[in-house]
Amino acid sequence: MKEFYEKTIASTEIFSGRILNLRVETVALPNGQEATRELVEHKDAVAVLPITEEGHMVFVKQYRKALDIVLLEIPAGLLEEGEDPFEAASRELQEEIGLKPLDLIKIGEIWPSAGFSDEKTCLFIATEFEESKLPQDEDEFLEIVRIPIPTVKMLYRTGKIRDAKTHAALGFFFSLYNES
Figure 1 (tube, rainbow, N blue to C red):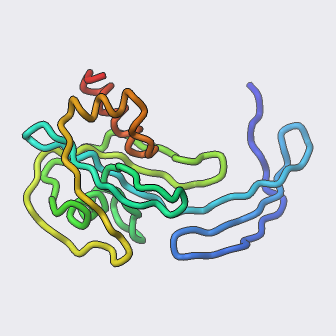
Figure 2 (cartoon, rainbow, N blue to C red):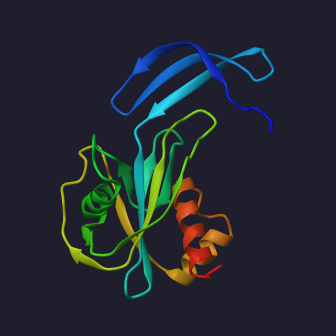
């Protein structure tokens, strides 16, 4: 079996922020050479695919500054310190779409940018709700969009869903429920 491990020789934190830290590491490669790795230490996140009893999926549209575009996404957000992913998923749905999930199913975990970031996102499906609104984050501006599942399927298949966590959650859903 090949050895893939990279041993850290030196590590320097170059930025420490509210959501992420940036670190540059010198590593020893399996072949004995050295390389530099630029790493993002990012808080873990949750993302929830809400499905209503009427057969709609609930998304949010929001502007993403890094891309300078508006994306269609499933509700998502960061875990607070020590917060359970199920609690975070419930909180995010209440903040973003005003619904408290009564039935949350964890469908998987993804690392959206494993080449340089340690951020892990837990993916959930929610199918039963009660109305319950929590205050939105002050810097978050969203539009709630309910889309029938057949339309979502068409958007997914034609590449119109471009957000990674949303794409992954839909892929899990369509494969688990044979909806592809």
